[in-house]
Amino acid sequence: MAALGGKLTKRLVENLGPGRHGDGAGLYLVVDPSRARRWIVRVTVKGQRNKRGAPLRTDFGLGGADVVTLNQARERALEYRRMAKSGLNPRFNAAREIPTFEELSRQVHIDRLPTWKNAKHGQQWLNTLRDYAFPKIGRMSVDAVGQHEVLMCLSPIWTEKHETAKRLAQRIKTVLDVAKSKGFRSGENPVTAIRDAKVLPQVNAKAKHHDSMPWKDVREFYAELAARSATAAKALQFAILTACRTSEVLMAKWDKFDFDARVWNIPADRMKGGVVHRVPLTDEMLRILGPMRAIASQYVFEGQKRHKPLSNMSMLMLLRRMGHEEFTVHGFHSTFRDWASEAAGAPREVAEAALAHQVGSEVERAYARSDLLERRQALMEKWTSFLSS
Image 1 (cartoon, rainbow, N blue to C red):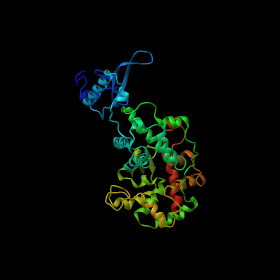
Image 2: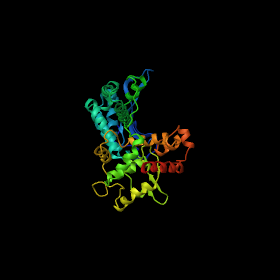
Image 3: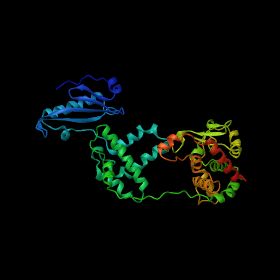
Image 4: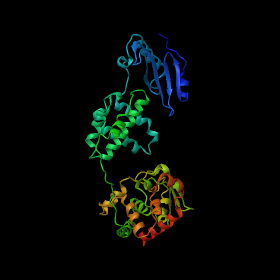
């Protein structure tokens, strides 16, 4: 048998571009176009033939290069060659160190931490697997998870918690895709197979509507809200005036406001649609912001801790204290949209742009590059006048 040595070095393993790079004696580093790196070894099993009668030559995955070092790959390749030379097929005789589904899931979560919009989204990704997948397949090695095992996770919640089940399916698929890229499994992803075969029943999910206050009642409520001095009340006023989401208002920072241009620029990473959103500022909005600026906090609406925002439950709890527990903060989105359509007669594209909703197909949006700021400015002036009159 060959000694543990070859053409590759640690530096080459880390920096080689896409392709198959030989180390010698059948060991290869495969670099995918996505830059994912994995090891394979090609061996010829003594005395065994393929269907065409030729010597049985097979590639075996040894794991991802981010998990298996160069020396470990050489040791495993040597083990596979020894088995092949003895007439043993490594597929059935190799002792591979394959992680469990839970182990790999937690590693994928760690690897993707920098890509989450915020820590809460990242934790939700893992919590879905923790609650619905780990109890049933968490201890299984990732190469043993098939359609039956995936269905064990999805079937109990497919109709009752359909949105959660769809997210769970996508997250299981991601983990198994990563397992394949690292050489821990092969073949079609069982989640894809289940979808293509339409094994699970079709669920016609009803659109979820947030309970919104009728627009004819919101002016009286706004006056009641304006009489309060609490920061949560001012934040809710600002949310209603700007027709923005709770997180966008609570995470607002002063450096995103251009008071000369009278525009609030919400960064793309704070927007649900992932696109920068410009909010025109009216006199009433500026009046609310004035006292907040005097606090000199990093956040516009500071919470109980210095330079920390209000709790994301603060405005909802205020609604409940005011006796309006039947409504939600997000519901004022719908209130504004109904007013814009029924009372203001605003064009659909202007009203939707005010809510940062994407309208039309991708092609239509590619040509409609304007965010209609000037027309939205006029609409928000009307909305402010209606609320504060």
